[in-house]
Image (cartoon, rainbow, N blue to C red; front, side):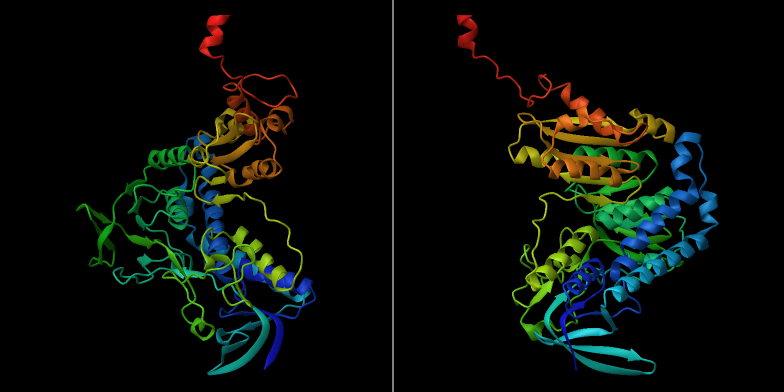
Length: 487
């Protein structure tokens, strides 16, 4: 039996950050993962593969130059499916190598196998060695569960991992279909639908709700939707699949609840994921997962109801971002060993790596209105920047919300080229309490897309009351009718 201060189940973003943080606190650390190599869902089937595929498609198709040169060049990508798979494989191996080196440098031990709780301090690890299965017991003072999620696979979907796939299977051996149906307009569904659309694959997106990506500003989603429609994507909101069957060629045929039928060569079912907590022995430690396999934690400490058991990452649900998962893992390790934890910023950015990108931080217009803020919006179109002209951009916007009384920045929302990078300027200003004066008075590199911040600020300023330089932005209160009469 091996004993450690800290054992982490899972080596995704939350697990790796927690393990290294604990090691830096001079604790003995073990990471257990049931995959053949470290990295978790993020490296093997999630974040890294999907973003690598996106970048590869944009490069092979010449997507960024299409609008500038008014041409289509998907034949090159169609004939280079092998190149896409090769790049996916190279990126995966690179990520695994980097992570293994990080663990080695920090003296973090790893163990390949499936872990199950025996009690709150003991894990049984089932290892497959050659032609036999071995078990090993591991004890720890504190344990962190970062097992991630797996695709939701309902019984009515005839998955065969060739023509009907989930988001894990689609990158396992990438093929480019002649047509694609995507069920589920969440982040994963939207990303893959738009990536294949960039390959000029006819895509039909099906979503039972009347809207999608509801946490994103509606004006940004409206702009995004129009871009998808302009390039021929079929978006069917408010429709659910009544049945999915395979025809004689093993191609999926979807019958919708409104009677319409959607036929395609391939179907991606991306309507949700569930926590991979089925077989880790939660019953042995009196922990219960919800109907989607997710664990409940104290958001300030990442502790579960069992005080020495922590959980972080996608297994605890929203926001399920690699970036936030890393911070959750760090918080768990710091709290577990009484290390100081800096207060997390109130706002953090979301990045959706669709084609085009979407990124957002702070309050959306709808949220700001619900919170009772009196505000003004400024919008910059990326084509209005000189850099946008050089790049041939015809679409994309940057939207900023400013509180009317103080001029403080309330939120930033972007759709278009570089949105996930541009958002960090807004993140810094927002979390440092800055406002419209920062964008108006500071100089940005020229030509850059970042100039869109100044354009958006000036756009908002033009609708706000003028103030003397250096003063807080304030609107003068209108005089009452009685005063007007007296005057």
